[in-house]
Image (cartoon, rainbow, N blue to C red; front, top):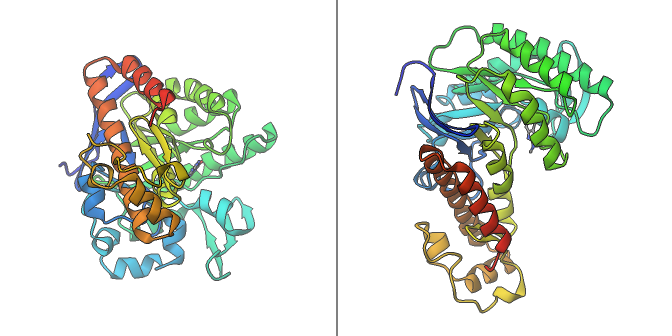
Length: 373
Ligand SMILES: CNc1nc2cc3nc[nH]c(=O)c3cc2[nH]1
């Protein structure tokens, strides 16, 4: 623990980095996967299972929490950690991405965004300052600047406009955040699939003395090759001594290849959302447990796993639960999937510590490709 936010780079293996973020609420081992706790819950999971499974930090969404239960109410209830009973670090997204993707966006201008709630249609305005204020009311440990993430593919002029706006909003968020030693505010690099704009965005954020950098504007449907190209362009510009967080990523394959470029933090709804829909992630690849071939398969997903959901339940039972749309099906598969994701991150960290990450990446991808599950 530390009363400040510090990032300690412990080892490298190629461009892959092993590190630790220490802050008052705990230590985050990187590369880290952050389970998504959108409205103050990692869906279908008890948070002690999430902790037990290896997560050091979870993510909350400002957009959802500002609509329900509301930031002032969360503050009156003692802050998000108290409300949801998660004592460790929480990172909050700033809301911009969800406004674009979920709400009835009414207006976006220099001041901020005006939108209609997808919950009850009520009208809301969010400025960079209000986003930071909300994240402060939530008592968030790592706060994101408000930004504008444009869809890809897109016109270079449109990507440039959104990137420049996000840079100006980063400055306003930096001022609004002020000086909070035990907390951090990350800037978000934008610039779409345009190398020159990515470099300009990263250079602009570097002037702001930030404690970490998110890579935004990706995992919006672009090919993986484009995402990785943008990492190769952007990461060398960013300070090596600060953490880099790739937003919304991703599959195990995405994460392995992004760690290889120098990413330290990830978040993705993939393991929990696909778990609720009957998709299991295992060491040997994906298993669609809804498939009829599992109906009488008494094997567990992986008898060698330390996760009870993975080791103690037959595929036949999981198949039955998912086909019957029983809550326990989504619960057990979410538990399995998050355990697998954390097991993968632990394997990644161990491989970097032993300077054999490239081999680990190749072996893991090959094991997935072989399937045989
Ligand atoms: C699932 N993919 C994805 N989730 C994202 C969240 C984001 N938040 C803020 N800013 C972003 O650019 C951004 C991009 C994202 N891509």
